[in-house]
Image 1 (cartoon, rainbow, N blue to C red):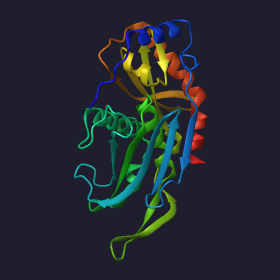
Image 2 (image 1 turned 90 degrees about the vertical axis):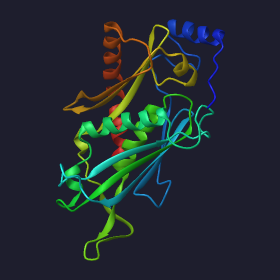
Image 3 (image 1 turned 120 degrees about the vertical axis):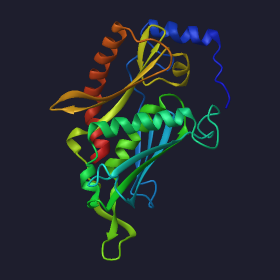
Image 4 (image 1 turned 135 degrees about the vertical axis):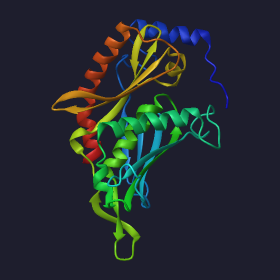
Length: 273
C-alpha cells in the first residue's frame, strides 16, 4: 500500500477555497457530483449495476444461495455484504485479503441497509427451520476519486432493488438456471441510503473528492430513510480521528436533511424504475 502525499500548499488552497464557499472543481460545499447509474452489466447475477459519482466508480452485484437458517431466526433469510478494494481503483489499496478499509466499508453499508428494514427477511424463508435464501451483495471499487462509501452504498441499494429471485425447483431441491420475474422481498417504503459528510478545514463538506477526503478531520456517514415524507435516521458511523462538536453535529444534521430531501426521489427512481 502506498501513502497519498498531499503538498501543504495544496491543502491550504483547498481549505482557503472552502472558506470562501467554493471548491477546486467548482462545486459548492454541499453539492454532489453528477450521479450515473448503469443497469444490467452482468447476465449471470440476480442484478448488477455500475454507479459513478464523478470519477469515483463501483460495481455492485447481488446473488442468492440456499442455506440453513440460524437457530435463533428459523424463519428468516440472511444477508451479507462484501467489498473489494483493488489496486486498480487506487494505489492505496493492496491485493489479497480484505483490509481494514474494505471491512469497515462493508459493515457500514450492511448496517445501513439491515437496520432500515429494507430487506424482508421473513420473505426469504422457504421452509422454517430448514431452508432459507441467503442474499449476498458484492461490491468492487473500479476507481477511487473520493467518497467510495456513498457510491458503494448507493450501488448496493440499487442492486438490491433490481435483483430477481432465482428459479427454485422444490421437488428436486435445486436452483435452476436463470431468474424469475419476481424481485427479492423488499419493504420499499423504508428505502434508506447513506450520505457521508467530512469536515475539511472548518467546513462540513458533502461528496468529497480524493484530496478533500485525505485532509478531512473526520467523517460521519448517516443512513437515512423515509418516514411519511420526513427523514428517518437508520444508522450512523463516524470515521477518522477528529472530534465532532455540538455545532458540527447540528450543521451535519441540517445538511443531511436538506440533501435527503433533494436526493431521495432520485434514489427511489434509480432503485425501483
